[in-house]
Length: 283
Image (cartoon, rainbow, N blue to C red):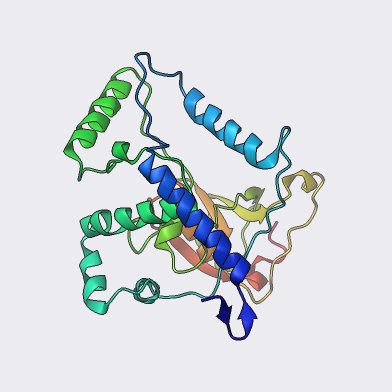
């Protein structure tokens, strides 16, 4: 329709008509059909060549790219509501509890959208990159074993957003909110509590006790003479290892426990609960 709510969309509709005709020509002419050469291209060279060609065609040489404005995400929705917004029935949505159903339902839709977008692709070469495809899965397993034998792969620790409830990392797509959030690095400043300890901390005698203050600006800590505490704040003396005790909040202790800074991994051990008032004049 050229008119909606009294407004004319004739020019838009004409562009869509041209777009549809051109995409039909591409399909009929196998424009994006690409046969493999006898010698494989060097790593990335084909990808970058195509990308540069298209950028020059679109943005000039040298290219002048448009300014991209970031948009904030909308209100939080449940996954079911998100699926409903795609036009799926409740009966169809229930099938997605099987992860393999995603791999059969969405790829054909994605192909149609990418074709409408004008993506230059030889669709004969598409395939699933999970264990649903036994051939690709076998290749990846062989590749990983080979790289491990060559010493190119090691198992190590890394910082990540983690869910103690699920016992696993919590990636962007796993969260109802907080998409894009990454680990925040703090520096802990250890300030030793000198013996004799205040009466409420007497149970800590014989251990090395520190006030552990976190900062985002460690370069400002030189020449420090004071440590501020919230008089009514709730703190605790938590075991870090067999000899050291940190005085900090329970939330901080929990975070440290998942970074191998707790005598019992992932389980902070509080030896005594304290308030800020208990800590005043203890350095």
